[in-house]
Image (cartoon, rainbow, N blue to C red):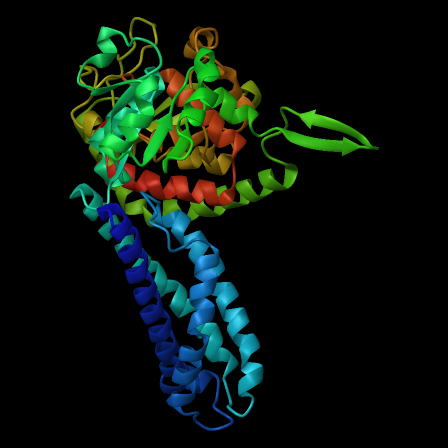
Length: 472
C-alpha cells in the first residue's frame, strides 16, 4: 500500500476516534452541567436525579448516528488545507442533525427520564469540543504535509501564467498536500518558463510518466487555444488510475455560473444578474452595522493609542481623507490614520505606495504593514459608504487608467467596497502584485457572495494582519 494511501486511511480513522471521544465527553459534560451546577437552581430537578449510566448507554447507542452523519457530509476525507471557518459551518450542520436524530431514538428508551435541557447543552458543548478537536486535526494534517508525510504526487499540464503560479505555490506551500514533480508542456515551452522548473516532457509522454513517477493527480492548466488537446489527454490515460483537475480561467469560472430561468414556458439563460438580492443587501448591512459597532468598542483602546502615536510622531491631521469610488461609481471620503507626510503628494500626482516609500511617517510604515491605518474605515461602514467585506475602493484617477487595461475592472463597482476583501486575504496587496489577479478575485467574491463567505474573509483577515509579509 502506498504511503499516501495509508495516510488517507489512518488520518480519517484518528478523526473518527477523536470525534467519538468529543461526543462522549459532551454527553458527560452536559449531564454534569445540568444536574451539578447552578443550572439545577435555575431549572429545578422535578423528577429526581437520573443515573449517569442511562446517558452513557444512550451516548454509545447513538454514536453511530453521529459518525454516519459526519461521513454523509464528507467530513472524514483528508481536507487538504481547509480553513477552520469552513469546517465550523459543516460541524454546525452535522451536530444539529445528529442531535435531532438522537432525540428521535429516545422513543426506544421511554422508560428513562431524559432531560431536554441536557440535549440543548449537548449541542452547544459538542459543537465547541468537536470544533476545537478539528482545529488541531487540521494543524496536525498541515504539519504532516510540511514534513512530506501523506503528500500526493502531482504534475501540471500546461506552460502558461496560471500553471506557473500553481507550480510555484505548491512547491513553496507543502501544507496544500501536493508534491509537484514537474510539468508537461503542450508546445515547446519558452526558456523563461523552464527556469527553476522540472520539465517532465510533452503530452505524448503523460501515460508512461504517470506509471514511472507514480503521479496520482494531473492538474490541467490549458490556454483557450489548447483546449482542443483536452480530449486527447484524457483519452490517452484510459485505464490508468489518475485524477484530473482542470484549472479554469477566471472568465470561464464566472460564466460557469450560468442560470436557467423559465418564464411562461420559455427558457432563458441568465448570463449576468444582480450579485446580491434585496434581502442579501439587508442582511449584509445589518451584519456590517453590528459587527462594526462591536469591533469599534472592542478595539477602542487601540484606536486611542494609535491616535496618540500618529499625532506625536508627525505634524498634520490625525485622519487622512481621500475620495474613493464605491457601489455604482458613487464617491465618498474614505478615512485612514495618516501614515505619510502631509506633503506626500505635493506635486498633485497620485501614486501607489511601496514598501520602501520615503513618504512614510516614523510610525507610518508599521501601521501600514499591519493594516492598522485602515481601522477608521469602520466609521465609513457605519455611515453606509463601505461594507466590512468587498473590493478595496480606489481613486478615480487610477480607475480611469486601469478600466481600459485591466479586464472587467469596473465590475468591482457592482457591490459596496470593503475594508477587507477576498483578494487581500489571498496575499494580493500592494503595488507589487498583479492588478488583474486582484480583479479576478474581486469578481469571484461578487459572484459567490454569502454571509458565511464574509465571515470567512474576516477571520482570514485577522490572520493576514499578523502574519502577512507584504506591506502596502
